[in-house]
Image (cartoon, rainbow over all chains, first blue to last red; front, side, top):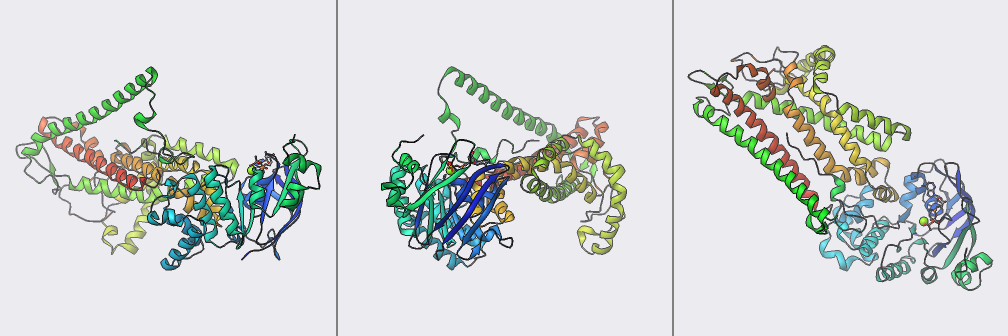
Length: 258
Length: 335
Ligand SMILES: Nc1ncnc2c1ncn2[C@@H]1O[C@H](COP(=O)(O)OP(=O)(O)OP(=O)(O)O)[C@@H](O)[C@H]1O
Ligand SMILES: [Mg+2]
């Protein structure tokens, strides 16, 4: 179910502006990789290139190579729609579809894939909501609007929606930054459980969170504003936090930054 | 012509924190400015309601004597001979013509308008969007007499062979049965009305589609939706209340449209036989009243026309109420 991502020499542009330069990294299957770094260094930008969501932004384009096991995500024959069905994404702000019920939100991706059978849908909706630790809270109101849930519940609903289609990889862009500490913990627990099944990449500004949930950590930085962001280093999380190889990583982590 | 304006999808959508927007007194701070503005707003609201009620009362009061004298059934008769000692008049023909022509106009303009709006907001290249939107807004402001003229002079000759073809091939179906009338048929008027209201439907739909939050669109795309699937999952549901409002506004205009229709209709001769055909002539409420304004010579004659106007008033009201109900039923899901 989980696959390895291999990125080689990736540049990302918005129009003529080069936002990210020369990133190469490997993301191991069934692991959690955290992206940290100062604001504007291109974490979101780079994350979105992993499922071609950057193409949604006018002017967004890449150079370089991203492999999912042996599939080239940017091969001319590769359909971005297929890529996104394989590599799911959870956004910073919970974004359940407001006109849909909780059930329909989770079923949305499956329906896009042509699953119509009510029994199958019921089963997957239930297992996804359980997988997102939301089932007990919503099982009695599956037909109520998803927008009526709390922020934390909405975010878990979005996670349920993303895992319902059984992606190989789950990308999360600051999934807890709009949430309170309790909801944040609930999501971190969830990430810990999900990594047995999925490859997870998470962007976070919260060092403790990166330390708590991730196996590997990638530090991004930029030399100056207007310069493209770069990957400074990627290593085991314990190493990055205790004994990084780069001085700038250490400065950033210990708060001696800028 | 009232309509369901003032309802937009954005009014009803929760804010970023998921709560419904503040409304009514909950948002008031009780300060002077707030109270003055609140008072002014309430007053305007009351004035509108009172005015509409007064118009209804006026219509009813004027219509009652004429209706009491009427010796034909007002709703089921096709005769129209108000005035005289033994007035006989009924609205069946106008009701049929008005409703079928307007329905046809909606059947054409809503899908096309929504399609054009989707094209402008979702498919058109970025450089084209603003000019296209401006153009549509401009078209929405063209007076209906212009559409009437265009229909008569340009479109009518073009439509004749189309009607001939349809009568030929589909004439077995009662709605398309040949009647010998060409020119201002119900079908033709329906099309001209459709073209007339198309810009309104398009302009308002474009407006709501354009406001679909990026987060919802990205949510759908990230699930692996194609463009069209994204539109179905994110854009259309978001724009739905707005499209309904737009359609009702357009329908209101179509039902009450006077000038263009007056211009184009082929009035039926007295006593011509009933037919279901859309290729029949016939007058709408508005065109009948406008065409015969010169006849308002005595109260009982005038009363007959006012009674017809009252039906149009009620019709518009009912249509708007239905739209309201449709929007309300979905409201739980947008709050
Ligand atoms: N839609 C866009 N169009 C043009 N430039 C953009 C766009 N989005 C981001 N950028 C630019 O790309 C660079 C990287 O932005 P990005 O959002 O990836 O940073 P980030 O690391 O995710 O920051 P944050 O931690 O604040 O989320 C920034 O210079 C930003 O201004
Ligand atoms: Mg970001």
